[in-house]
Length: 116
Length: 107
Image (cartoon, rainbow over all chains, first blue to last red; front, side, top):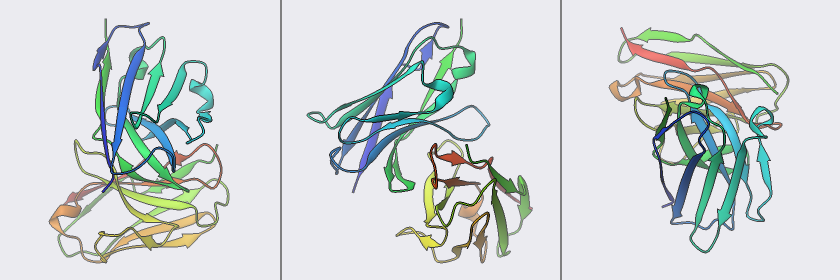
């Protein structure tokens, strides 16, 4: 059974860099695509970006200048960095596995709050 | 980006009711549509992919239909654990996008 466990800082100040990591167990990062998705409090889901087993990335156009997704296959982990955060980046952040055209496994989610 | 519009946004129903949720795409997406259930404080859970294929372990009271621009999620007999928010998602073309959600509450 595939399991995604994520961690990272939950409280940031404006202009800081958000940093989250997702560890995959029960499966290999050498297959499928690995995504980050966020959800502002009380709102819907927004795809942020993804990385494939070769390390190629795709990012949401409006976030591209601030996002970096990376892969560490030796640790079976992938990570998200989002720079220059503002209050608008306050959300629950999820890591997820993309199988073809849907997301079949998700991390537990981490609420990241940006406040001064 | 492809925009997905769900209706209704909110649905009040009773245990045992048959309920349907619609998802309309701003352009044709073949059958590259998935449905998720999200309970409060939890991650979304995949119910259906390919518009109509039930994810393993999902009860058969859930079903999906449609192609092109209009899709439907149906719950044949609502159970207490089905009160949640439901989202559609497409990946006919990048980026993946989600509908705004339909919250199903107890009448």
